[in-house]
Amino acid sequence: MPIIRNLLHSLKPDVLNVHYASGYGTLARLSHFHPMILSVWGQDVFDFPYKSKWNMTTIQKNILQADRVVSISRIMKTQIERLQPLVREVVVVPWGVDCKKFAPQPRLDSNKLRIGTVKSLAPKYGVSYLIKAFAQAKQQGLSDAELILVGSGPQENELKQLVHKLQLQEVVQFIGSVPHAEVPQWLNSFDIYVALSTLDSESFGVAIVEASACGLPVLVSNAGGLPEVVVDGQTGFIVPKKDVQAATEKLIYLATNKDLRHSMGQQGRAFVLANYNWIKNADKMEQLYFQVALEYHQ
Image (cartoon, rainbow, N blue to C red; front, side, top):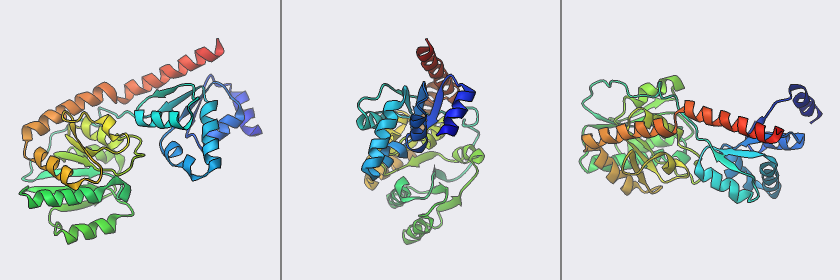
């Protein structure tokens, strides 16, 4: 701690912005530096506090020490206030996306409708439910459609076995991990984007925001903060977690309504420009720095 205190004394920052309420939040609290903004990101408030009483007490103290707490979603703001009702103020500044890079691009002609996701292949992201919904949609007459899975992860082999069991090998592609710079290209190859997370602690749907920025209609589960980034019935559809039948119905509805897909994609793009443009969100964060510094140094 003397090293950190000496460093802060030497730098004399107007504001200290600390990321994550657990480890770095604890160091910031012990430094006794003010003004301090604490940015929380998800697991530090959804998972960490419940592992032990000591963890819970630590998080509560760290939150209380902050002059402001910054959350990337409303659902996480609620969680912070639940953990520490005495928190001074929680400001929501969502993740933004680069709306120049994530933008609609001309798509190559394809005879098949492409349903896709860009996610880690882990159980918590519900990719198995997407595969099952796609299989049911095919059984119910959704022809000339293919499923594109971009990403890798611990569930990959299990998901490949599921695809084989459902006899979907010819219409499901496992792309593997791709550099983030290539994500806009993949998104623009899709007609529909799907994210069926099973997590109540899903803090924010940045992948969904990226898809909407590219003009895609989206189909998501009502997990955590995902519904915050979708206007149900306008930019996409929200279905209950783990509800394969509901996902199947909306998937078929989107797949068979080209004009609806186009309209939802346009509205999704407009929604992102209005709420999740990273330039606007960076400006909001900068304004918060000035506000906190001015209040403390008056």
